[in-house]
Amino acid sequence: MINKNQPIGVFDSGMGGLTVLKQLVRFLPNESFVYLGDTARVPYGNKSPEIIRKYTEDATKFLLSKDVKMIVIACNTVSSIALDTVKAIAGEIQVVGMIDFSAIAAYRSSRNKNIGVIGTKATISSNNYEIHLKHIAGDSPIKLYSRACPLFVPIVEELMFDHPATKLIAEDYLKEFKENNVDTLILGCTHYPALSKVIADTIPEATLIDTGEQSAIQVLRMLAEKHLLNEDKIDFSVIPKIDFFLTDFSANFRKLAENLLGFEINNPKLIEFLT
Ligand code: DGL
Image (cartoon, rainbow, N blue to C red; front, top):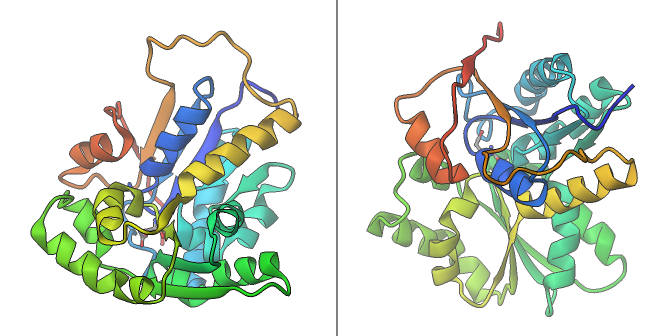
């Protein structure tokens, strides 16, 4: 029996999912969370769909073993490739990915229906955003532009938010979107909200869609619908209860976590998946 006091499970290939956790904490300040970052096997974005599915299975089973009431797939790559894998294992536990609600938000926000998507190589080659957007548009005209931006992930991991090289790379990656009058750009990767300033400076005419934010709104709605929101009195003076599990501790994980999440992560535990 699922109950209100159980935590929400959040899975990402690494630390980037903390940008999604940040949004979840913002919209659901009363909830507790279990965050799993597969930092030993990150990045997923350059890997094959078969491997991504296999890693995702491990992660889903782990989160279920922590008695979560819902699973949020913070990783856009996993959401694009392996959401069905998670759903098949999760059974009655609801699963929320990054794609569908963000596609709706992008469609609604766009005036000229020239919509852009950026993400990892795996996300872009899956065409998942395009499939959703074309489905939403139906017979109405829509123009979609997509581009893999693999360098944005290491740029964020190296905390190079304001580095001049980041601006140059952003200009190159976003050129085609500007030329094609894209007015709405989906940030289809966990790491990209951390670069939203440089992206917005590079393509100021576009509305940026933060997939973590869109999904957090839906998590709130779905939990409310099922009467599964934690109703304990909120104590805003304490940091929300989050249990962190990582598969490796990289040298700068604390600094990166603080940057992406906005507060310190306490006592992450190391777990191991057999590959
Ligand atoms: N979390 C991944 C995503 O959102 C980015 C990092 C990776 O490639 O694993 O697509």
